[in-house]
Length: 131
Ligand SMILES: [Zn+2]
Image (cartoon, rainbow, N blue to C red):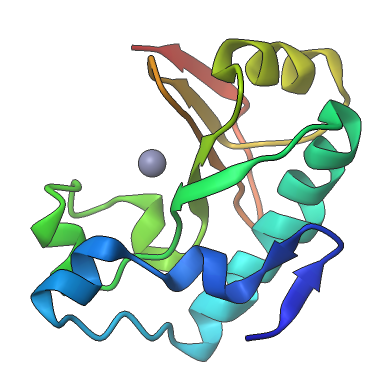
């Protein structure tokens, strides 16, 4: 699978243990691939370069079936390839790094073990939620 940016490959956004286990085909549409690329080049890679430490994609793109299987909300940005759940050494520090940067994002949702980040083609809201 091809490399989107220095530290991220498309496969990282598509591969899912749940999809594999349940035999779900999580192949994204061309539009979803475009969205993943945008999310990666506008937000994730610049953030990765600032943070300077590994960021692992727990969950990126989710087809309808996979989204249902993981209990995602129907309107989830993951459905469009516009969001990623990121695991790293310290999700709280990653959020701090994002907020200290000038990077544009739509939503940052801090969970105990990962940070959900989304980026939209237009009208990014820069909304921060701490769970
Ligand atoms: Zn998420």
